[in-house]
Image (cartoon, rainbow, N blue to C red):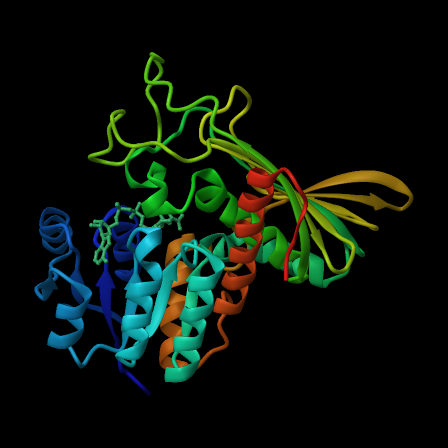
Length: 355
Ligand SMILES: NC(=O)c1ccc[n+]([C@@H]2O[C@H](COP(=O)([O-])OP(=O)(O)OC[C@H]3O[C@@H](n4cnc5c(N)ncnc54)[C@H](O)[C@@H]3O)[C@@H](O)[C@H]2O)c1
């Protein structure tokens, strides 16, 4: 039996890196071998917490010091995804890169080219694909229970959750909830619709609400170190219609601060049935000629694992055993093209064609 462990170098030691590290602890053939971060405090805090001895102040330093690494996990700000990923691929490592794949589609294309040139795996951190709900939805869709899926709703709306910090600094993030939250639900709905190719996008976006520091209700999602004084030059709301080449469409709504219900709705509508993934799985169908609603018992489905654990386990499996990747860079590029088109349409007020 092959007992080799995958030696992973973590690039970026912030919030999501900590979630990844917790998950890797449960993946027996993963070894967190080294970590780097440009922020010395975050570096030592995370490395101390997880007992990682090899710690470096830059990607270059880590790659030079640890030629024995097999893989890298990129958990840095969006503006640095491409640079860190390409450096790791060129050093011969397999890479898992957090969502969004990059700052824009042009950078994402360069990342895929580097993966191909070096014949390495490049997986994108579309963690929602690894939820139990998504796996149940895939199963139901495969059975044909929805028929032809012609429409989906992709909603990721926070009531009072403008994170501030780097998330709201466009130079570092690329944008607000569109690229931060919308990316998750656009990818998941498109994936469940069978990965149709986008043809056009029509969108609106605004920044009318802002951070609302005057509210007495505490803002959720604000990371350590973020403050109301930080730059905030991103949108806080967007709505978009994404049209696909098979005639299907997705309606996106996403917001950081919104005077409406907080929601994470993913719903698919087909000729035979509909599926709602807004916390659990509900099938709208017919039974013996009657309309019927079926709530599926998700916890009984296979072993109920944490999404991040399932994602990390899959990355390690793909890197070690060549298993086919369930969150490919090619999909990351298509999603980046949709995101770019949403920003362009919102800016110009016109429908934007996606090539
Ligand atoms: N999958 C999810 O649900 C999810 C959730 C949160 C964040 N994310 C993604 O994870 C990434 C990081 O977000 P976060 O919340 O952890 O941010 P964070 O600020 O907490 O952590 C990012 C860390 O990267 C470091 N860094 C930046 N550039 C670097 C570079 N070139 N080399 C080394 N270190 C560098 C920063 O110093 C920081 O410590 C983002 O791309 C974000 O979109 C994903």
